[in-house]
Image 1 (cartoon, rainbow, N blue to C red):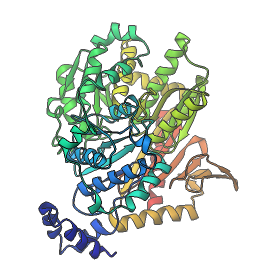
Image 2: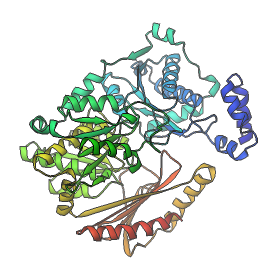
Image 3: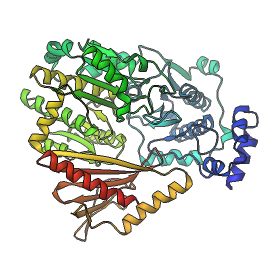
Image 4: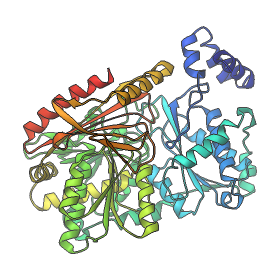
Length: 572
């Protein structure tokens, strides 16, 4: 069907929905807007669906949610007995999240698949835990993570508690594409409850067990008992779902000196105090910095709306604030886990760490120092979750820690996605250890750099929305595949990894990457530096990662600047 035919079909199919009709009628004379909403369907992949809210095929709305859910139900019912185990559904504080979650539950019920629906917003890691805890066959979270307020999304989890992988995503997509919007119906809520198909999850069924499990991740309980009450923390949930579990955990482990940013404490779908609810953005900390100065805090925590990411700001000995990067947080936690376990003799010989390919190589150096294996995966925490399951199935490694540079961290196996609550515990313990030594958390980061070398990373992106933007991204990636750079910033490209082809090419010789196919190019450079470029899986952006390192800070920063400048020219 043409774009106009799709547009007219929506007006006809949803003629009884006055809000949808009104929104679509308002763009009747805007051909560019009609094209953007109807040139394609909102894609469903390993990260589920994510998009701008609004009416249309290429927008997040109740009709796409219902259709995706009917597709998920159809995929699950290929094994009817397994489908009876049900699907757990959680949601965050975004616009229409509660409504989309309810629709998800009632479409599943209409398809005969039991639905476990949380009674209020919950973090992504609690959903991941609940899928395993309740022995469900799948899970769904309504969230757009750290995206701007006009976005929402729909993430699907497998029975292992990790986001579904490429094979399952392709199977679900196949059923979705064969499903008409008008075939998606909701069961009456009372009927669903009476038949036992809809089950509401309250405060006790999952949350208490989850918090108790998180407490088992404490490495040095005596340290927290001794130093915990002295650590002065400011916490902001950025209007999201971390408010209750993060504060509860910190209190129960003895960190009682926690001040919460009141203006950002309660759910707010407009995220009215910030431009974007992203703990990577320095602007998200403005109010937290003000409160920290008022109460004398030395560390600030920030979690995003679905509480799977944690950002950390720390004060140095001179009283200056520093926003740590995701790589710095990951490495300071990793260093603490390995060094602490080595001191106590509890570091397993078969221990393993997992990180994404775009995360810092400093982690490799730290693992090498402690004799611990490190594995790399494609971007997306689902691949780290998949690796955890492989370790457990084969019995060949004990999972110790996983992280991504985009502020995602995990040290448990009972959750299979990044966990802001888990990360809050870990970084609190590191801060207490530093306090016991009379140094700051910032000092610890600098100590690690002095020991292993200074690693500086830069992430840049170009936003390319709409049909033209998608074509431009494909054009950029195709051009770089055909003509990869031979040098960047004066450094020779020593090898090229093409994850779409699954090859690593060095001196004309190809070897397999060993990872699933993905539209990613990775250029290895001299001196252990590298550049990676990939289209985002959740936003209309093409992303560029530059990593540089040197023995001295100034040299590493200079290389990083030159590398970032040279690399950005690749996207032009």
